[in-house]
Amino acid sequence: MLNKLLDGFEGKLQSSKWAKITKTSTDTALRDIRDLIDKGILQQKDEGGRSTNYELTDFKWV
Image 1: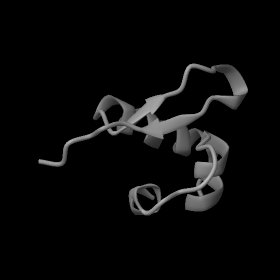
Image 2: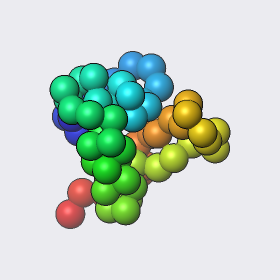
Image 3: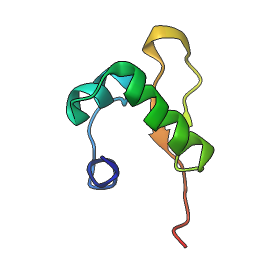
Image 4: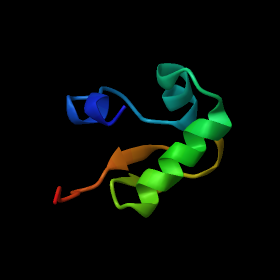
């Protein structure tokens, strides 16, 4: 999934879209997203609630 994001993912990333692409439940998708937020790879956009969007940060690969 990270490869898709790094290779020019179009549109807004939401947990429901992540679940559909990765063929997992929305709960699993949200856990994946939260893990990437904790690692500093993704960040939550200002909007919240059911339509929360996420985007890549300026993550520096080590």
